[in-house]
Every structure is written in structure tokens, then in C-alpha cells.
Figure 1 (cartoon, rainbow, N blue to C red):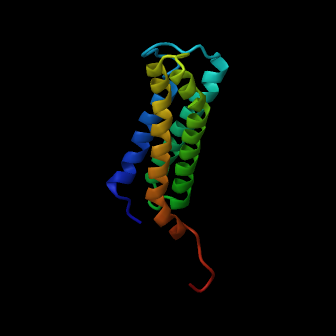
Figure 2 (cartoon, rainbow, N blue to C red):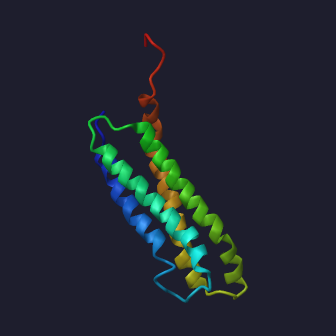
Figure 3 (tube, one colour):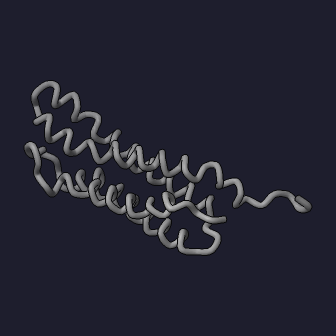
Length: 142
């Protein structure tokens, strides 16, 4: 099965979004948030590394003659879950920003990567959804 050029661009996009997911706690923009370093690792570094790992896996798979569409679909699901994690762990910051407890710009800086990761995972999964069933062998004789 021949991959379209858009599919080959997904790993690069995943790498960039994964890096973006990691940096907000370490690059202060629009004000700082007082958050424990361990929480920042769990909320940003772990999901960012998961996205980068899935992008690296996809880059390797897409270099093969017959990339596993099912594995590429699973990679998209992992990315979407990483984005969901980031969104859910930052949801409380929105109410804190509305109450004026934390700067709204800082919340936006911390929250946007989660949205980007979640959207990337959804688009990635949609891209490989229709072709994933091609990788699953049917009953003998088909």
C-alpha cells in the first residue's frame, strides 16, 4: 500500500507538537504558575514524550514497504489519550484564571499544547482509521 505524502508528514508534526507539549513549565510566558515540579513532569513531560515516541515509531513504520496501518492507528490513539490527559489535568486552571487566582495568559500557554496534542491524535487516528482494517487478516479463503 502506497502512503500519501500527508501521512509521512505526521511524524514530523508529532515531534513538533510533542516538544511544544513539554516546554510550557520551563519557558515562562504570560506569567508563572506555582505548580510542583513533579506535577509538571506528569502533566507535560510524560504526555510530550509519549507523543514523540509515537511519532518516532510512525517514522520508522512509514519507511517500511508495507507499514502496519493498525499500529499507526494505535499510535494516533495514544496521542489522543495524551492530549486528553493534558486537557483534563489543566481544566482546574480555567476556573482559577476566571477567579483571578492565576494569570489567564499563563493558563492559555499551559493549555494550548494539550488541545494541539488532542487534535493531532484525533486527526492522526482518522487518517489511519479507514486503512487499519486492511492490516487485519480475514478468514482463510478470502
